[in-house]
Image 1 (tube, rainbow, N blue to C red):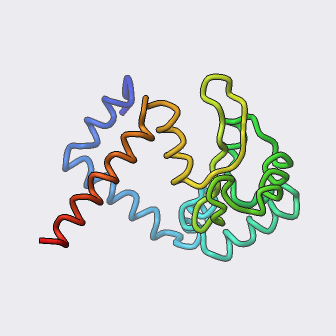
Image 2 (tube, one colour):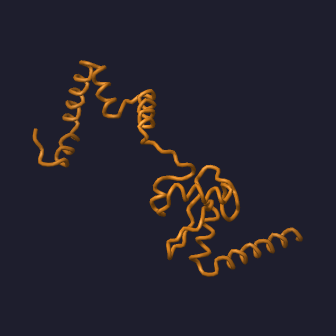
Image 3 (cartoon, rainbow, N blue to C red):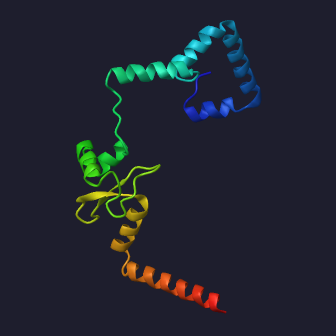
Amino acid sequence: MPYKNKEDRRKHEAIPEIRAHINANRRKHYHKDVEKSREYSRMRGKLRTTEDRQREYQQRKAAGKIKKVPYIHGHTLRRHRVTVEWYEATLAAQAGGCAICGELPTRKKLAVDHNHTTGVNRGLLCDICNTALERMETVENWHDKAIAYLVKYEIAQREKEFK
């Protein structure tokens, strides 16, 4: 049955009797030649085995289509207009760690720190330092507020200890 658009087809195929008929036809054709059906599904990328994936990976790697970049994703490079060479040189200059606290990256990559008004890249930071620095730049007196909060908490904690 020809359909005017995809929405009409979806509505028609949603009717339980029609859906049952469609599924029965698919099962019938699948069971005619199971191996051919599986091969077709593999080619379409559905039933790929681990061996298939490994073979495809090795082929792409041999063709030079896979480039491993340590600690950083491609979208980060493009977003900050950073080259792999700049990232690796900066990482080496920072001894492989955050520019502020010096911590080495554990699970995640180091973030590219940049000035939000000029867009100039400054260095590589861990998530904690990057977030704190962003707060200090964007929220007025954030540093003073954070210190006041910590002092207030410390005083309250000491008062509880003396009581």
